[in-house]
Length: 249
Ligand code: SAM
Image (cartoon, rainbow, N blue to C red; front, side):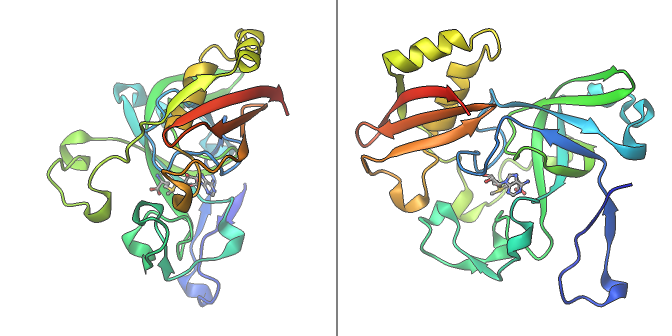
């Protein structure tokens, strides 16, 4: 059984909690850069969670497909080693104002626990492997999952709640065009990744660059890894992006 310790570094032993990983995410997001900042923003981002160890048992998911959405509780394994900070700079505040980590969804938390509501598309069981097919995710590849719960709108959704600096969805209005070279690549990868153009477009519309670059045309060529592909792109104006090329990594 795989364990992951989530205790703060200086806790006494009796304050420690150990969780068993119940599965891992197989995500098209192979690196942190360009992952949306919350789930639901890139609806075409599809992934799977393969249940593992003694959680890989079809009894655990019986009747789960009654629910269109699930909560995924996970470990921020990609940033866990960097520790945490009491004050962080949320990108929504331009990256230059520090606020308490517990007032944010930062990955650098006392315990590196993340929670995302994602769409549950289907559950499959093949060769005794239980697989949850999910979409609209904000999860890095190989993310360890520690729990899954159904999303229950009557309780989990509070439409008139105050959400401070994150009251509304971030604007996602960059326009995206594909160069002739990138269009040729889209055709080449059409069979393997049928929704690739939409996926790239939805990711880039969010402007994945650091907060201080938002709204600027920096002339820089960026690369991002989606699936097994390296996507090169650059700003072509204040609110327009060109995908230059798509190549295998
Ligand atoms: N929805 C979750 C939450 O509120 O707890 C995550 C929000 S966090 C702001 C989203 C960011 O976490 C993504 O943009 C990505 O950069 C990062 N991320 C996703 N999965 C991760 C992982 N396993 N390890 C480290 N960082 C991760």
